[in-house]
Image (cartoon, rainbow, N blue to C red; front, top):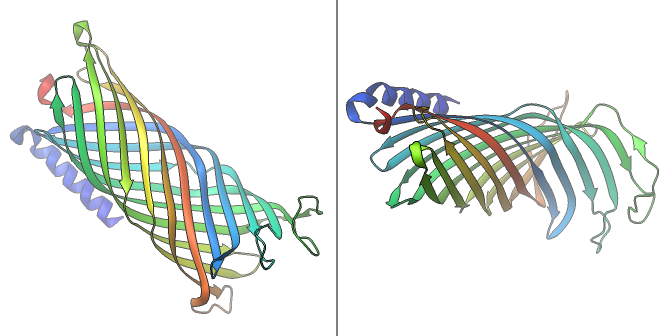
Length: 317
């Protein structure tokens, strides 16, 4: 958070000197929603013994982007927050039967999204080709999310595999809490087309895609019924995103425009070590569980509508 505050301070400093140095300043205010799923795996050797799927339904989001342009260079800072809501469900599959890839136990729970925060910084260079433009960029992104699974039911067969026909044992209250902090650099490329109508009304359509070449993730998984906490330190993997922007700039609005965005993001195969400890009065230290490992995967879809507000723009003075 101190880093975020420092960057915001530098942004305001640039805003203060912008008239002297010809810097263009733009704010973008955004509202929208996202949905998707986050999977956490536990492995014993090469065998997956547990899979938890955190499935979000429609989660409202709000965001802010501050953008500084100097000639063809652009620096962008973005903050996104999700509104805490009952967001979907969590399904927990255990695979505890040797030499079998079918679930042995199953549970289902309602999910409350406690927090969802995303912060990114990005720098790029815009190349103009008549009405077309291409903008390569690089940046860094951080996200922090936390869910709590509550209520629901268990289906634990006395023997054999889980079939879904077993008696449901109902649960009340918090069952599992899961938090993840994820960092990754990215490289992106945006290309688009701008068309100016009579009376200077303008539309712009663009597509942007990027790759995450390396990912760091720390996860914290609290099983309240077992009084056990699991901590995973995960590295590597790969990810990326793709999105489509449609922008409209009406006449006589001093550059104010509206942006519709739809896109998706995926993070795959981030693996690492897992540690655990007992919780409660007899709290102990985290101990690495030899022979066991963890993995996480994320898939998200985003839709948003934004207002583009130029604060200082050479083109509209």
